Structures are given as C-alpha cells and as structure tokens.
Length: 195
Image 1 (tube, rainbow, N blue to C red):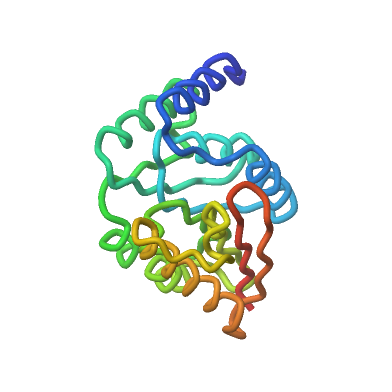
Image 2 (image 1 turned 60 degrees about the vertical axis):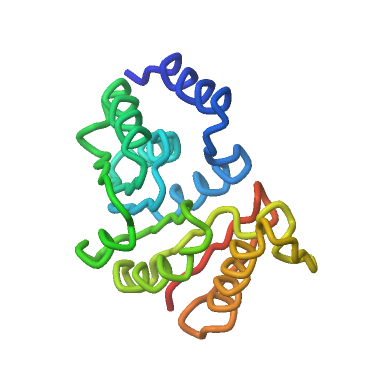
C-alpha cells in the first residue's frame, strides 16, 4: 500500500530546505516517457533526497533504479526516505562521485536521468552512452538553466555552468547518434534517444 502521506512529507521537507528536486511539469513528462517505454533499468545521476528516484519507482512498478549521490548526508536521507516508502528492494543508492562510479557500472539501462553538477553534464553523457541500450533514452534536467543557456548570459557567477550546458546541448543536437528534443518545461529537459 503506497504511503501517500509519507511521500508528501518528503517533497514538502525538500522544498522547505531548498533542496533541488524535480519540478512537477518535468516529472509529468518523465511519467509519460516511463509509461511509454516501460523501462526495466533506470540510472539516475544526482539523487539528492531520493524524491525523483521514488517518483520513477512509483511510475514503473517493475523498474530497478540505480541512483548516484555525491553528498553523504543527502544520500543517507535518500536511503531513509526510500526505506520509509518500502522501495529499498527497487532503488539502489550509490554514494560517491558519478565520474568515478559510472565507468564501473554494467550497461543495459533503458533510461538515464542526469540531474547533477551542470559542469559535468558532458562527462555524464560520454559515460551514459556506454551504459544505455540502443534505442534507450538519456534525459538531462535543467539544461536551459533559468533561461541563461539560450540567452547571451555571460555573468561570471554562472558562466561555467552555462558554457557546459551549451556544450551538452550542442553535442546531443548535432551528433547523429542522438535524436534529441529540448522541451521548455521546468528548467529545460533534453530528451535524447540513442539511434
């Protein structure tokens, strides 16, 4: 029996503590994708408190979700949240830097969801290509980054993140290996199908 009240508390606490969690409209789109693709294995890069991994597990009753988190406190909170909702048999939280973890994972993921350090999106993409099945999807959240990516934004504070996201978009839209759609929902969602 799904614990809706507990789930709502996880979301509320994350919002109150300004922990970045997936936006509702982005989540709706990903739910549609999960319904259509019926994935067996999902990889998430950037767990935070486990909210999106939990959402993916709720959407797909079968999928096994591996999720990577760099911050130990957040990873521990995610593990607790996942246990509370009795999803620990389907969601596996890995603690550490995705740059080091990804090369050691087994390929065969149906969907990879990137929602971590913006400056590493291209690295995550390169590793993700090796891990996703042919015909699988790589989803990248926040690719439009508050509108900065598609504007002439050049302020020092966010310049590196913006540059890396522009490089990511260029790669997934110009490389014939991908069929990419960039949606202006949430903070921008790139959906790349591997040809």
